[in-house]
Image 1 (cartoon, each protein chain N blue to C red):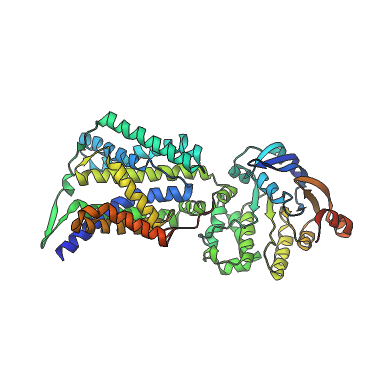
Image 2: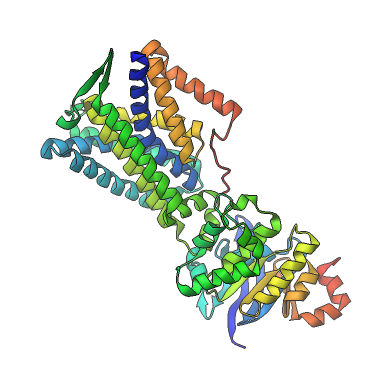
Length: 288
Length: 235
């Protein structure tokens, strides 16, 4: 029972981190039809900016906000200067976003060095509880809480606001949204930048979890996010949330019992779902 | 009558294919003008070109003297053009309420009055107001599409084959609604159903192979069987 409880917390915390990456990626794919390989790079930029700010200010909140704001701007620049030129051209999207990933990952190495940099958890999140035989790390519970808050926030944004209404409509008929007098390109920039900010939030929260950030961390998390998007279905917020929790829990269980099969389990799950539900579990029918 | 939409020698293309090869027409304020023609003549492309959804190669296209050529679709719509595409363009995952709300440029008293007006015009929509649009029938989706184009104070609405795929009884209801709408709005209607075209239109243009080949008053076309047969085939 102790192990079950511990795996549940670890799995949900891992799922929360993956969700932060995958939700943005899923909406970018669903709304804009853009296969975005810069997401992992934006994740590490969030982590590095968080660490740089935290080491100067010792303020957790300020550092997280600085990471999100900076990467939001970076995402907006990516979209305006590069991605907007290749809408509808998937091979070009893959090439251009892979190119940006290489350049901006190397820029991280140039600025902060190739070796991982370390950061301590903020004092108020550094403790742990021991319940029976299980050790529950405060920070992991905090991650679950943040993941939940972000999920509720995005859900409210998508279902209760005009921005969300345009996003939902745009996933189905971007041409018709424009024909109603709405500048969908502006929303594309906002969504791309918002997705980037979520990736940065993931990176900023990941760094204190592992105690360090390296330039290679983005790739691993990006792969997980893509798996979640495939499992959940592109453009589906609910799919991203469900897929992230499922992948997080499965990852925690497999890593505990058969660590060597972690990656195999994720990919096998994705292949099975693709075989039986090609649009993912909650995928929308997208008309371009 | 004051000229609203003016098109001269309009040529537009999709990919490698030139679809419109010289369309000329004029729609005056308050008129209901019908575009007729065989399948593949370029009628739908004409409406999509006006909306900026198809690229223009040459010619002029202006609303109240302001050119629409080369402009993004959303700014063309903001000039005061409502558009009801052939496939309705309804957002399936949004409710009827949301489909109407997303089209509103502002939520002032006049806009809300127009919303109430379209809900009175199409009571089906009022009954299903909170339902997802994907649950609607073809006729109800068409009603929603037309309602959405009326929700703002548009100068003209473009309607593409509203009768397509609908049962005769629904077409009849639609004809009554369009006759009511034309009292307040300028309409440019693409329609293959000759009876509906006659019920709504005052003037017509016939397009063939991407060119305007004839124009005139609807009464003249209705009484000229030879002309109908020559340009429109079996009606």
